[in-house]
Amino acid sequence: MNDQPYPDYTYDDAAAKRAQALQASGREVVDAIGGSLFDTDPAQIAKTLAALSAEQQS
Amino acid sequence: MNLTALTLSEAADGVRDGNHSSVDLTQAALDRIETINPKLNAFIHVEAEYALKAAAQVDADRAAGRPLGPLSGVPLAHKDMYYRTGMLATCGSKIRNDFRPNVTATAMERLDSAGAVYLGGLNMAEFAFGPTGHNEHHGDCRNPWDTSRITGGSSSGSGSAVGGRLTYGALGSDTGGSIRLPAAFCGVVGMKPTQTRVSRYGVMGLSFSLDNVGPLTRTVLDNAMMLAAIAGHDPADPTSAAIAVDDYVAAAKAPSAKGVRIGVARGYYEEGADAVALSARDSALAAMIAAGAELVEVDIGSMAEINALSAVTMGPEAATIHAHWLREQRENYGAQMRARAEPGFQYSGVDYLSALHLRPRLVSEFCDRVFSACDILLAPTINVATPTLDETDVGASQGFEAVIAKLSACTRPLNYLTLPGLALPTPDMVVGMPGSIQLIGRPFAEAALYQVAAAYEAETAFHKRSPEL
Image (cartoon, rainbow over all chains, first blue to last red; front, side, top):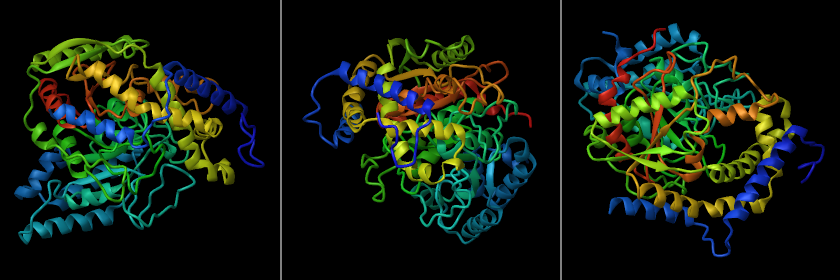
């Protein structure tokens, strides 16, 4: 965890604590879901929405 | 005749039929703004001259027999983050207090093409980053049903101005509930469309992956009319979907809930909800049954995963947008805005991208699970009775995150899940204030939501009530 994102910029302590907590819970979820993201298609979300939309029409 | 009491669709029909002019409508709205806005603080700036000129043009077009658009001559105002070349767009901030962009948002161009008249910029949380309606730069926005209470945010002015009948409709934006929350607290209809349904070109961003543009209106039909005007692919926003736009207006004009399986969201949406919110939800369920819907139970389970990944997505995106100003003029941010933006600097790139890459999988899983059991999911929009401005004036003080988390608990998950959510007033009031439910659909199912919502609205008639101001 960096204390300074930029020179002369110091985080507020409370912000740092919040960030740590939020990132930890996010990382926990990613780990819990598991599985490789190796084959992730950058346009996958658009394709998923299109597919779900098509399902609805059929 | 009190022109400001008309709905948007009635106002547009009246212009088209010659019952009143656009100038009449616009002047009536301006007069009401002058009288009522000091009580609500819904407008940051009013563009009276610009509006009257545009209205006169609509009237001239009608007189000349030129075709009028579907929103012909109706004055609208929008959250003050929709850019118009050369016109003020403060983004609810001190930093952009005098900002005049050199582009016009596609949503604004499309509303203009549909014949709408622009009245001015509406109050909002600073940079759209707050769910209550407080604003330390432009003053807090107030709820038209009880001016001591919050409007909800971040589209605070949009909820207040539509609820207070200062405008016939307004655009808001929704990154974690910012359309649906003010719609809920102010007793109006608010649509967060499917992610990518509406162009975001020329609209201030907060979190590119989660931001949505959508309307707040008095009625379901009005809402459908506004969304119909702005939805659809925009070459200027390559992230906007190329999927065909359904006929929302036709859907709203053909109300039907008969045989529709409405999923009553159990689990997450009930946990931590106040009894009054669930009571309002239950009265909405009764209205749905009366409208012919079939209720089924759907256990949503936990949304903890979704909320965690949503936070990891939003944090770095918001921090990136604000990084330069946080370095150069940190003191010009409000305390809460700064406190919420700063943590985003600290997330790792891998965590951020993991959250984004997991999104399609989680969206598919949610849709498969929920929409195999029901056609439309119904959940509370808010899980508390409307708090006062004083109760929620927490700034960046100890525990402010809990206040924010509670207020947006019911709305936040949909943004990561991309799904459309339509907030509707409940038939029973919650301690003198509106209650609200949201109808949640599959991606791009906005027309289905409008059709069922119109049937529900016919049962409740909440839209016929007006606050006394």
